[in-house]
Image (cartoon, rainbow, N blue to C red; front, top):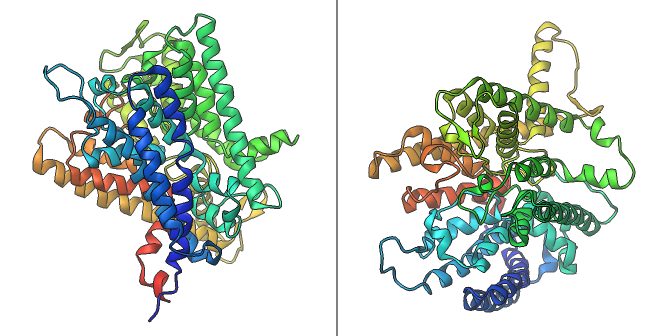
Length: 522
């Protein structure tokens, strides 16, 4: 039986995206020239590879032969391809660092190809899990560290969505491509043409990013954030709106003042909001967010988790938890700030940390572990299961209870006054089942693999690492906490987590369908 998928057309479009990846690679080149602390040759070589590989793939087939099936293959392959190419600067730069002479001299952990791929996949999928040790931050140039942040910003709204917005050759089949990549059950068409919708989403995304950068740098100018210079403001603007969590500072947002932490919170909330709502607000429909049932649910969950964490922190954890101003227990401002920051960071899957929450009491850590599975809104840059799915599941469970008492009643599930198609409801249950099945299987593998080579990694730490990578959250607990890294795991476990980040970012189904015989032949 012949193949029913035109893989050549898919690879041709993958080549187009890879070739155009050379454009954002110019920004680290400029940074390398400005700071003069390395990275210029690494990025120059990567640009040449991207152009050569992209051009070669473009010649494989005709992109105009794209269909729905080809869209799945193109999107999944694109994320793998850009992650492989995006890892090259890390490898080139790492092997350009002289051998370590003194035991305390900074060194790169990204010379290992598995580590480099892990870091890049974590970047583009906006996961924020890292294999860079605290000391290795000092081993890298401003250009290399900015590339980490830039990969997250490019991946936040979606590489393919960006390509549809700016490349005419992707306008054919653009709707299928965006639907396959969209972070949620589907993407809302805002304008008559799908390319215009892609541009509208990216303009809203870029605009809010620019606003955050200006405000962060403004705190520095006002003397409220002495360490938040322009470089840090740009870096954190890139990774906040992408819900990515990478930071050029090894201690994440703990390295900055309380004013910075308070300012970042509303931008994380915005990053976890459906970007279509911002478009409607800009069009003058100011009541749309208040009428949107998912947004109300999202804000309610954020408020509830924040209140629970604040109460736990204020009344006093079992461990001595302090920040820059002293003990958190009994300090209302510090309790509210850290509770709101970490609740928002984990729920929206941003992955920033205002302090090392692995030092919190077990009740607080369990609340955060539960939050790893929540996620932001559909159409946001957040990962995990997503608020709209949890809302539909809750409504469907309520309907089942109603049907038990009224077996003959017909009661559709409604969101915002609109009845949902039952096929869509089944799809949400299927996604959630696949999600937790992958979580369980991945957890078993990592727990067994970690126990085989190291007795220092607990089962809870391993499962939190799987939940954090599958949900594109980033930090877990213990050895993979917000001030730690994933170096403790074997290459096999890290490659599994690379796959989990990839599958989780693309919402599981568009990737898993590629492994079925039905997709290729029926």
